[in-house]
Amino acid sequence: MNEKSLETKILHTPYAKPDAYNALSMPVYNSAAYEFDTAEQMGLAFTGRAADHTYSRITNPTVQYFEDRVRTITGAFNVTALNSGMAAITNAIFTMAQTGSNIVTSKHLFGNTYSFFASTLAAFGVEIRFCDLTNVDEVEAHVDANTCAIFLEIITNPQLEVADLKAISVIAKQKGVPVVADTTIVPFCAFKAKDFGVNIEIVSSTKYISGGATGLGGLIIDYGNFNWLSSPKLHVMAKEFGPAAFTAKLRKEVHRNLGAYMTPQAAYMQTLGLETLSIRYERATSNCKQLVEQLEKLPEIESVNYTGLSSNKFHTLSQEQFGDFPGAMFTMDLASREACFQFMNKLKLVKRATNLFDNKTLAIHPASTIYGTFTPEVRKEMNVSDKTIRISVGLEGIDDLFADFVQALK
Ligand SMILES: *Cc1c(COP(=O)(O)O)cnc(C)c1O
Image 1 (cartoon, rainbow, N blue to C red):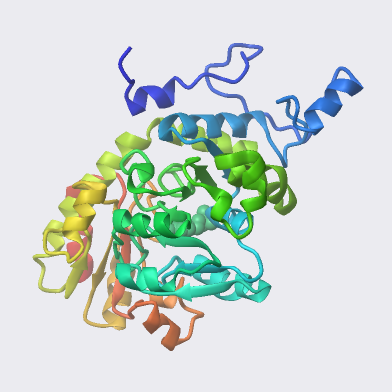
Image 2 (image 1 turned 90 degrees about the horizontal axis):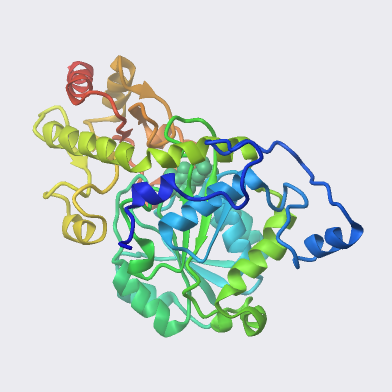
């Protein structure tokens, strides 16, 4: 039989066990623990020799179904669902980093990821090597035997920079270092991370997958395509588990100890979100592209930054990696911080809110909010300007959206 389409696969992922009532929508198993018929079965389940659920900090049927759907779509070896994107990042990094190891990354990162690296992780003796990830030679120069990961965002938020993933993965492979990529900006319905050499994919499922701002969630997607024998921390486990060493360490130790597994309620909502992910993505990105093409012509706007515009400096690379519709987030620069605030306050349809890829269009001034507690020097290094507004485009009618921008710019 022919390979089924993504949409079909998402909708028809089978349950691990038949539901007692033939429920068409996966029930929410709001249970912390599970009963066993015998002490022997209990022992088997607790020691990982039987696949039964024991306790919902470790696994839960509703969350597992969500993980199974993502695994079906991505073709990954393993998917682990956490209760936020940050929980996915911290769990993944704690699985591979230890005192004395280093991470090669960029300062152009989501605010909390930067803070996790620069403050939380640095306090445990993990060295963070910030460099320009759009410069492959610089990346290569920063990697050494203690490098436990190259961490990047596929399109940085809010700078919208694009690294050459294939070039970076060649270096990573030569040096025996895994590529860990945060793909939140372009979800797996539109970007096949594995084909670009990514080993561990991280997604904040709060964003596109949830869709309606229904709750938080994060995913760690392990493609099982890395030889962990070269990992400073996982080489011992790699002797026993081979390419499954990362998932073994994560599922048997780190995620249980950190206790940030996804809740069944969130998994239920995000499982529903997955069913409409690709049609929502098509609509949101098509809206985004039409909007930026119109906004680019307006004299009130100094510049519009979206890698899908042919005028953008990352356009060619972005097209190679993400196609014609690289996400539904763009930024625009106005004359000043005051002009940005005036524009934001005049918006009638577009919501003043953080979050990304809600079904509704959202606007935020990053410098005074997400990066508001950072010093002006750090904001400068992170390339977060006072003149920039970030827009996440939703599913509204395009004419209504454009009209709201035009009236707010007057
Ligand atoms: C939102 C976001 C995160 C963090 O996700 P949460 O679900 O808010 O914890 C990480 N990376 C990127 C690129 C994001 O946009």
